[in-house]
Image (cartoon, rainbow, N blue to C red; front, side):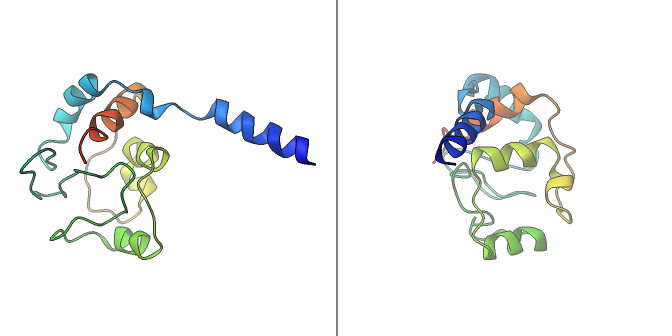
Length: 125
């Protein structure tokens, strides 16, 4: 039983996407698609969407002064965190991931772009 558990964990670890291995410089270019609604960096402010400093590894719906969709408020109440995997799923299809989100962006279709954006966002605390 123990051997099967270790094997399963190792298989998942190998199969998991390496989001952290994205290219932050390429992610900065992809993030241009997000800039109409989101800001990052020093002095970042909420726009149509919240400022995204500290989003990677941070709690869902935690940016002060931003009014989140009910779905994100519910996720926050449950203690949800924006892990790289959760961000990847959201960026792939925001409306599928969070039914009821106000976010109109359809998502990023290329896994490489998703990894790059996550790597870029991870540079902002």
